[in-house]
Image 1 (cartoon, rainbow, N blue to C red):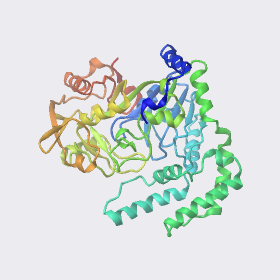
Image 2: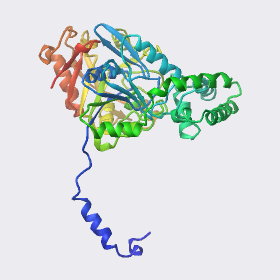
Image 3: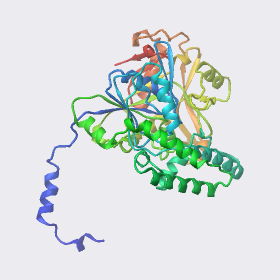
Image 4: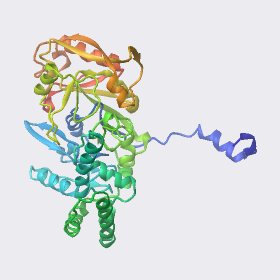
Length: 452
């Protein structure tokens, strides 16, 4: 439609347009601090969240489900979290599970009860996220079998039902917490319809409809006191009295459904946009965004991994780093640090700073390699390939750095770190253009060195 056909602008419209630039930005209120994974997950986000949670009033999960696994060590005790924010160890804070999270109610209640026995007073403000049913988990496994039979390869999901539940949400057949707490007769009808849809697609799927509904009716009353309207809760938190609000991302940038190594990704947005949509937070209220990075690279399951080391280096990293998934128990694949994916993750998230974890795992290395760029057919490429077939074919260009060959696990200040370890950290900062605020040299909270 040509501009000439629109006719003259009305004076009022022109006045309004000119006036917009003079209006103050509506960015008042409490800023939200965000912690996100910058690789393929398992970077140690829980440790950073735990560190920041000690001074936070509200701690939120915005996406994912019980496929996430965060381990936190406090006073020598190790805690594992899957649905609850790992910052819940701060019993004075309110923990929020946002609308972007898919919720397996038995898992949530079991985790809540287990942690309550440890003496924590858990306060969960749970928004109306989509409910994951047991048949979603069964379907997840059946889909993997189907992929293997048809294509000879599967995605390597956790089989926790995450993908099928998000599929129900996208197809508008999913059921939310608010549906469960409203008219249970209507909820039951929609539950039966959803179960029948999946049984039509997977004839071997068995669903105990009556048994499931009886359990869900019980769960409804148990979670009812926890439920709040999420949009209003977060609005009041941001625009009310001063509060420190912390958001804990699950999974990581390279597992994002849009920006990750598709199709070997999760089913939600693990990047900063997922914070806004998964909690109802305006972008203007996002404050610091911290990316968590391992001092090397790992990933679980199938998919391209350019710096993977299928040799004694990979085995050493796996053994020293105890690289086993918290949720699945699967061994993680290991390789050198890849700065191409860190630059890519920073393009999407705009990190304020990095937390570099597990530096101590590299203490025994004589020489450390860092992937700095990719080549394809002999030519350097200035981008991270979107196509996985292309990513599988790239040749990594490495820089070699000398190892420091000394124990860093007792270091508590920047000055305590060996000079060559400091050089490694500065090398990463300079090549990615993001400062490193924390350096992890052990499991405990006290092992996180703050550099500025």
